[in-house]
Image (cartoon, rainbow, N blue to C red; front, side):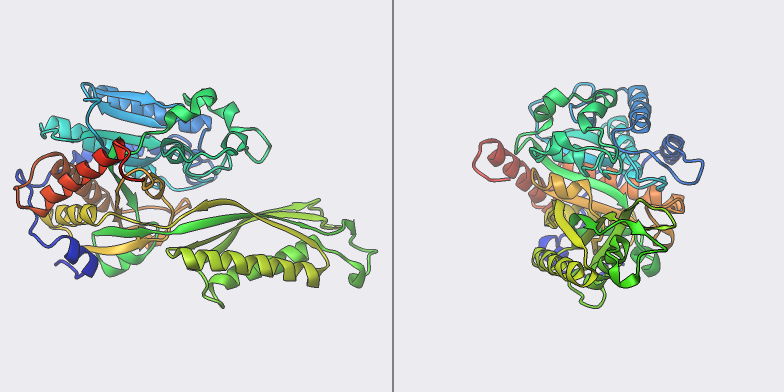
Length: 461
């Protein structure tokens, strides 16, 4: 049964129009590849640790390249470390229909975040060629983005930002927590720090981008639905904060004379949480990293460094939360007798997905007999970065217990296959022709028109 969603109903009211019917992936081949990728970076302490721009990410990229070669596909790694997979006889003149996700994980993360979308993209491209789907108007290209998480080199969405031409002047100065810069990692990842600008695609070259992903939350599982059609992706602001007090002896310094950096940091952590709880200023607010110095039992901490983030789908709410946190930091500094240096180190804006692509995804789900619901994404994704270049769409599948970024991250294999089936069916619909009067054909024409106008410089990104 199709749930009612006004935005989709307005944009896409016709019945599904798939001339050759829905496509399906080779479930055994797809799951074997996905499980094989999960062995790379398998952490002895649990989960997967395959950090962006690390040796493990490079091994994963090589694993995917081998699979692509066996399927008769051509691969390339751009200067930013992104893996691109194409037909061997790809037409360089056609605007690109791109699909995929990221290869890396957080520390002790799960086996599906990012990896699921990349393996599904490779499988989908393989099925499109095996079934002889007509390549009409768009060239299909699968992508595995590098360093989406920013867990090693502190610059998330590295690969997609490079592709969108959004790596700012500080990107080459991005470092890991030991101070090693991104440019030191890139050659081993197949990239080239001297040619980073060449990773950017011109506006109009990509006609549309689709990303398949696990939900990373509990909504679909709780509702008993098969597919989430993402209508918007949250924006995120990441803060770097240094709280400075005075390092002193823990036994001889009277309590009233202390400038305890950790106490000040603890107050600030509570303030961050209050942004999303007591104040309701943003959807979520988290402190996920903290480093205490000197971090010994009998010494009052002198310096604490931490990272905080806020997320919301509304830009105005994010901006208000940023101002509130700045005010809170000033208050903590006064009452705790410490210095607080708070600065924004990264921003990603919230984006809406394309209504036409949402309609194609919903129709693909229905053609496969799958239930779906429109929903926002509480996590950031490469799709929101590529939205600077092209219309984007996202497909979610249920996550078991809503767990992600943790060893317990999982989804039913049936859900994983169903999501891949939706992806390949939607891609086939966009690549082939629907009936002349169908909404599907109108979506194809709209995407082609937007791409053409951007290439000609008549439409901003």
